[in-house]
Length: 399
Image (spheres, rainbow, N blue to C red):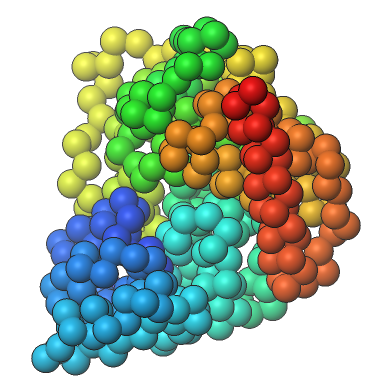
């Protein structure tokens, strides 16, 4: 892979938005194995200034951006004596995406990643999407922007990347269903009463994947799978009736596509984010990832079951937001981000996360956003309403 790429066009220029998170760190780990094939153009982080500075020094990055403007001086000092340009603030994250790179990893967590992701799409880059919220909040607009600019959107979520690998784009009419798999998270076998008392440290103990805090909580509530369902509808241009979810505790089968001739094609592998990241990094070629290879003879069983939408109502809420249309998916995502933050700060019960999202969805039904600016307006209004609902929730619990 590396020899072909280097001879064809020189090293591929890479920018990583959210480089200090789990996806960003895995991306840099893979890049380090192919120093002749990749050049790091830009890195960004929100507040992890020391970690960002270390990454920039290690990769000789041309540009480093920190989201918190108060940390500009710290980053500048940490990178003194290097050739790395430094910037800070939300606009600096967008500047990182605007740098002249061929390939951009969009891994900023939450709706905050939308402006930078949009900038990379608008300039026609290859954009590896680990920031599912961008598609959830602005799917139609983002896909249209990619079509206009010639940008390529490559899914990095393990499930969407799996489907991408077995999805015959020239045979869409013959695709009957795509199937997203879910581990079920740490509370798969817990009762509703047990989940009522779940603590953040228990929700953060994912059985299969090592991920950031927000996505790990989303996995525990299955909000993550609801977000992925919405993402899949936009990525693969299918109605939600053709997107299903099954619980697969072993996390070996990551996604499936069912065709009209009876074939069910699956992508399999050990649960390691380096696999989908490597696929996106080398696309349309392949590269070694050093992920431990899957040995079929060592597997004892692969099991699948229907998700329980009574204990885990997130999937129902996600479908409701899709069918409601307008800006409902933006509301779904924003309310969830507020609720997850409150749970991690021990200000909200685990089971109240979905309840709060449901109340905000019921009370706020914005029209379809016509621009990215209106997406952000809906997002901010939904967050304000979610915080108001949170205050009510806390007041009730206090009594």
